[in-house]
Amino acid sequence: LERLLTHYTSAPSQVAQCVKSLSSTMAEGPTNRLYVGNIPWSTTVDELRGIFSGCGTITLVDIPTGRQGRSRGYGIVEYSNVNEAQVAIQTLDGHTLGDRNITVREDKAPTKSAPSKSGGNRSTIGDTPAADGCRCYVGNLAWETNEESLIAHCSQVGTVVQAEVAKQPGGRSKGWGLVDFETPDAANSAINTLHNSDLQGRSIIVRLERAGGANKSGGPNAGRPEASSGLQIVVRNLPWSTTSEDLRQVFQQVGTVIKAEAVCHADTGRSKGWGTVLFENREQAQAAIQGFNGVELEHRPMQIKLDRYD
Image (cartoon, rainbow, N blue to C red; front, side, top):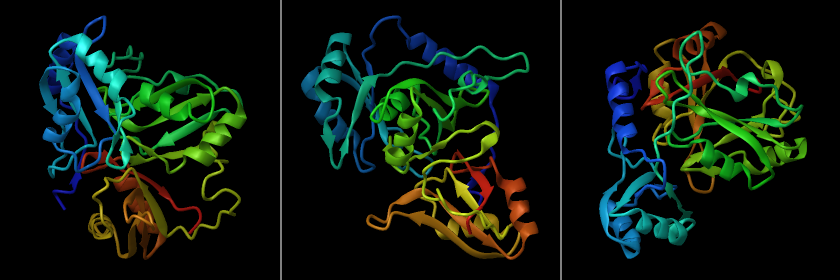
């Protein structure tokens, strides 16, 4: 259980060191360092090197991994010069690797937004009202997903006015974002088309964002009457490796777990990144929400709410 469950704690010295390191590699113009996203989990460093070696002299190839040694679904490739990197982008962006089309772009450190008066990094798009019916909440994002990749993905269904990925005070992604579309039709198309679609290795959640948090999306529960027993919770933003037994182990700390299920795709058996936990009574379900919402499971903060449709 200790392997699975960790609380997020900021480490100012490490964050400062990371920012300093990133800043030193940033340039105003193009860079020779590339981000390669949406690669299959099984991709090796040698395979990635073999694909990109035809575009120039490679000085570095890396595929970051999680605590269990599993690929995070993206890689870094560095060339000896900028021109070679640009050739790789033009040649290999959209290239098919396994069953996926990879994303190739310059790897540049994101700029930090100015802190608000209350401290920390504040959302800018979230503070600005959107046209009615035009803003979507997009959840279960990969850590490496930024505004650029979010806009690219959502632009498949309509014109995106602006997008923002929510950040922790240290600049780390919270795993969700907001997207403003030009029209309500485009937003509805995003909900109907992109909900549960794959973005950089994760099955994303797309719903309409309303003032006060009311959800009137065209997602899987659209049109269903709310009829919650108060006994079951929905746990989102789970790591792909989380099993039903892992969920049971985590939540049995607060009460008797009647059933725990990590939801998977029926055709592939692959995790959808969310699950449900059914408790013996309502008090235990509330205790789970209060005690574990925001707590990290394999470096991903769980998003926990009462299941309104159980």
